Each structure stands twice: as structure tokens, then as C-alpha cells.
Length: 281
Image 1: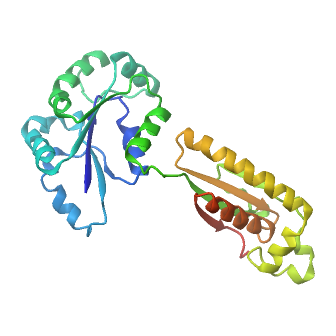
Image 2: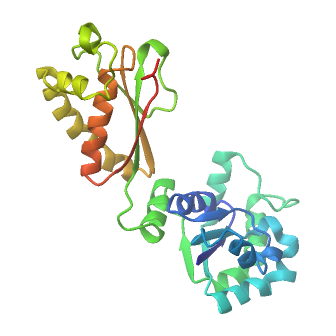
């Protein structure tokens, strides 16, 4: 069991860090009460060892418990090898982030954010002292911080998850799509009597579409285009991409193109799932 305790200054990027850990396969709990830390290993055993990596955020939001239960965090580090990560950031960077998000600092009663940060650093000082890794996020964008987490705590061969969906334009665009493509320019098997009642999942329809010059040229450009884009999306920190491909009814052409593209992407090492939204309409 790999356990990470994440702490740090408010506005230093803990939420972004935690979400990236979740995408890297960690079971994550935000605002975890220190008082429960002693019992947490017992709770994990109830899952039947299904959780192999977990991350817990402990920060100023539970300030009333800090002094009473900090020995539990120290014991977890010494006895169980828990890794403690502390995120730091300059006052100027944090104040700018609070202004952009219009959030209030969790220390109530402070006259301003700068005073609140001073008090927060005092209260969190003992965690920073025992931290295994102190990360200054002052000059990191959200994308850069996320990329750091995935590169450090994710699998080295982790690749973006690709979701491919076929749909019929007659039934509306899929709202979950990051990218929508239209293949209604391809010859339609619907107008071939022996293919009308079949779908793009059938061998006959696939062979009909593959025999068209338009398809051969299009699929070559499409596959190169998608393989070009995926690393750029990964670079921006996306962990999954949904590409929707539509035809008129969502039964023949789009279904066939989605399956062909999925096969091509899997051959290139990507984790691909497919869904044919309207194939049975």
C-alpha cells in the first residue's frame, strides 16, 4: 500500500494535485481528519486489498485538531512509511489566485489574505518540517503541476484514455464530445437493399465502406490527424478524450469508422473504449 499525505498552503494547488493523483490511480480523500488516521489502515482492509494507492489531504481546514492529533501523522510516517508532500507558494502567487477565484481564505477572522497566510504558515509549520517533499508551485500553471504529478506518481507508460462514440445526426449531437466528426459524405449502405437492415458492425457493411475510394483516403488522413492531436491533448493535461463520429442515422458509416479507428489506436498503444449510441434505433 502506497499512502501519500498531501498538505500545504491554501491556494498552492492541492486540489489540482489531488485530482491528478486520482487520475494516476490513487484512491483520494480531501480534507481528511487527522483523528481518523490511526484507524484508516483498518478501514482499507475492509476493501479486500482492492486499493493499492491512496492519497489524503490534511490541511488548515481542520485546524482545531492539529495540536491534539499531530502525533498520529508522525507515527504514520515513521511506522508505515507514509510519504508527506507539502505544497508551498509565495504570498503574491496565492493572493493572485484568491483574487481570480474570488474564494475566501479558510482562516476566518483574518483581516486580509496576507495576514491569513502568515497564520496558516505558523500552524502548518510542523507538517512542513517533517515533509518528504516540499514543492513550490509559485511559478507553475495548473497544466504544469498536473503534468508533474502524472510524471512523478503515474505509470511511466500511462496514456490518455480515448472514448469513441458513433451517433446519428438525426438524433442530436452528443453533449459529452470533445471533438465531433461527420462522415455523411461517405456512400450510404442504407441505399443498398441487402445492407439496409444490417449495421456497421457486420462484415458486409464494413467491406462495402472499405471498398469506397472516399473512405480509404479519408481514414488515412483521419488516423494521422487523431494520432497527431492526442499527444497535444496529453501535454495540456487531459486524461481522457471523447471523439464522436456521426452519420445520418448512426447505424452504418459512423459505426464502422469508429470501430476501425479504435482498432488503429489500440495498435498504437492507446486505451480505447467504443460506444454506438444509435445503432439499434
